[in-house]
Amino acid sequence: MKMRKFTILVIDDDPADVEILRRLLEQIESWTIQLLVCNDAGTGRTEALRGQVDLIFLDYLLGGETGLEVFHEISKGGCTLPVIMFTGHGSEEVAVQAMKAGVSDYLVKGRITPDSLRLVISNAVQKYKMQQRIEEQRKALLDAEHQRVMMESVAATCHHFAGPLTTMLSNLEMIAKGENILEPEKRKMLEQCLKAAETMKMILNKFQQVREYRTRPFLEDFKILDIGLDSIYGTHGISGDEIEHTSRSENQ
Image 1 (cartoon, helix red, strand yellow):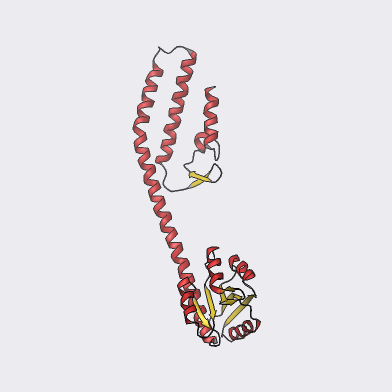
Image 2 (cartoon, rainbow, N blue to C red):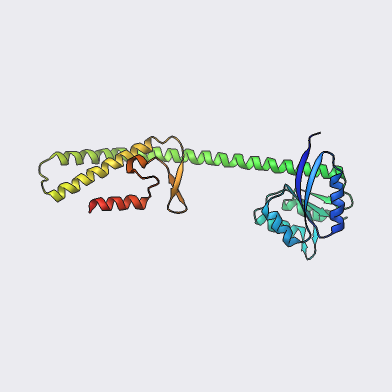
């Protein structure tokens, strides 16, 4: 039989019940279990939110709080670990509430056996892993859809910009070939416009060559599509502010 290892957080304020649970767990064949015990709701919440265990055993009665209250709090805090709740005799209504709230399973104190522990732990961990895989697949599908939409948007933008840019560049080149612009200042302005239009053309070509969705940091917490502008501006990770500053400097 394959050896299995688990780290289990037990939130229970009754040392006697914790000791009974420990002995029952030790009787499960081929399992090695490390228990992390918290005797009050406060430290239990803290450990649960750390997420350093495989499973949580949560007692329903915890001094002035209930296990359901603790479960709701750790769930709101982002804990997605499987939780098995302990209830007392005749607490079927509590068990139903716990299952509706989202706990993985429940056990009635006094009726717990090594076999029942093996079953609920195995099922809870398996269900949790399956949910994790489903969530990963969901995120992968969302990322793929996001990439598809972005790539289609880039292609559409390139298509709509190409025509006007070609017209503008052609007209600027024709004007530059004329001899009627002899004033140095106006000639310089025209050359700057031509240079800017050529740069826009190179950027457009970069967009047209994009084949995968890849981003880079931009303005603190924001990210932008990485199209490899280093070859154009010669500066790795150049920001929009730097580009704007460069353009202003050239015009001075």
